[in-house]
Image 1 (tube, rainbow, N blue to C red):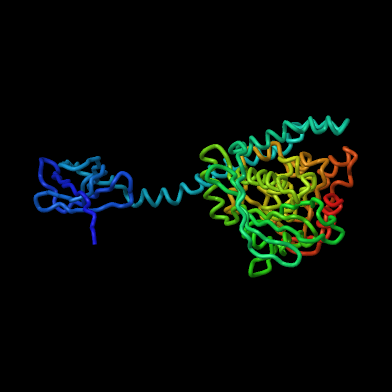
Image 2 (cartoon, rainbow, N blue to C red; image 1 turned 30 degrees about the vertical axis):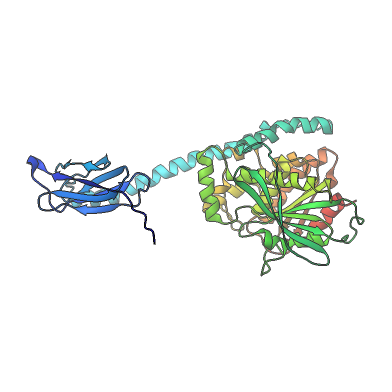
Length: 451
């Protein structure tokens, strides 16, 4: 067998202390520039000498010896000597340390309380000032849409702005299976360079109850899972039932062409990606909203879909994604938000017996710069208006407490009332937990999306 020889180079030197005396037993670490975790070690001998035979690289070398300050330097092959200075931590009396521990904690706690009160005041002021940032014109539908359009653009910018321009979708489709009612495929779409939309496409073979005549373009429905979910669970091809109750499959059985896209649904993964996104001035959420735009682009390209009758139905974080998608993309003709609609400031910050506030969870990805200064959920609903909007809420749902959801719904309903389209918005309450109920929601979507 042919073995490749790795070129090794000697790297050696001397470690001395005060007066040039050799330092024996010092630990010398060598770490390649490119692999800072791949560190090798050598110890100095009685004469203070060390040596390595290392692959050709640029290295960081550091020396650690008891009683001396550490030394660090960069080197390649050859010789590198180190001179160490005596080092010792300052001596502190135990009495002093104990005193600090016992007397300073209340002072530190007070610092925290002062800052939290300061931010609480800003949050309360933002809640009070938010309506003044909107100047909706209800004198006509055209004037209304023109008056809210700048807020739609500002919402996209606030979330970090769309990450790119539209490029070819290059759809790739893979058959999963088919029944007598519909065909199921996995689909990948190009969203950004190196980033794809993944989801499942369900295409009915025959009309659903009260559905579209054979051969005519059908209504389409994007069905969005929430945290812990996946397209397979939404599409009904997973191994277990769950809180989504295969609502994508239900929609296909009702005669909709269904696309069930994936959003990152692992909380730790979302937080990690959110930290990276905000570090470069954007958010994970706007990238995923861009994916929803591309899903709608894909559905409008299908000959079996009527582009004027594309709806969106999502639950939990998928419900939030649904509301945001409808606020952003006016091509969505009707939407249903399940297990999400909230009084925004309260859901973000206020502790409740009935609902968990995001501030008390690890879900840092729920926070966006300046969100509450302008956009409550009802304000986002005003960007959906006059398009039909359904809010679904369970009496035992602790993610979106139904009374809070209903109060926020009444604010949204007022916008629809002033536009003269009160029948375009509806609240559906059911007895149950955080799950897709579907009965009234599908009836609502059928009314607006089917001929």
